[in-house]
Amino acid sequence: MPLKFRLAGLAETFVDNVRCPKCGHDGGDGGDQGFRTDLTRVTFDGIVVVVQCECCNYVFIPDGQKLGVIDPRKLRAAVEKDSTTTGQPILPGISAVRLEVERLNAERGSKIH
Ligand SMILES: [Zn+2]
Image 1 (cartoon, rainbow, N blue to C red):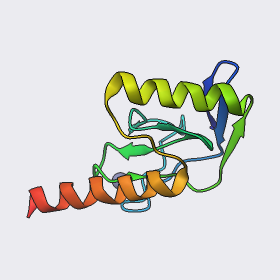
Image 2 (image 1 turned 60 degrees about the vertical axis):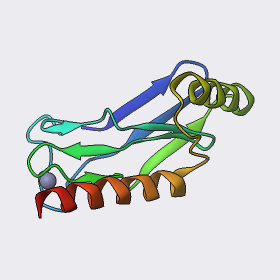
Image 3 (image 1 turned 180 degrees about the horizontal axis):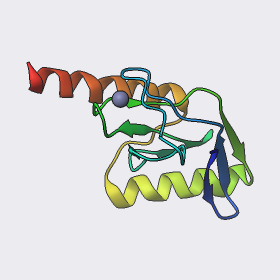
């Protein structure tokens, strides 16, 4: 089942299907079961969907997601405002989110071992 993430009037992202690259979990019959998406980040490039597998806790960016930006100027303003509000650094694009995801997995790995 494709997932859709949307910020009204700003951006939207479609994910065709999600499969954990670590343990192969594929979301069951619904296609989106056993995954958490609360690590999803909004960047200047659009919404970058970040998924955490509830089976093995691995964090990953699903392949084949289509990022659509509806209003680049408003999106940029929203990302900047969000950064000011939350104190989190701005993630300019998907490559910055990839680094963040690598960091999350590395931290998790070092806690386990
Ligand atoms: Zn997994």
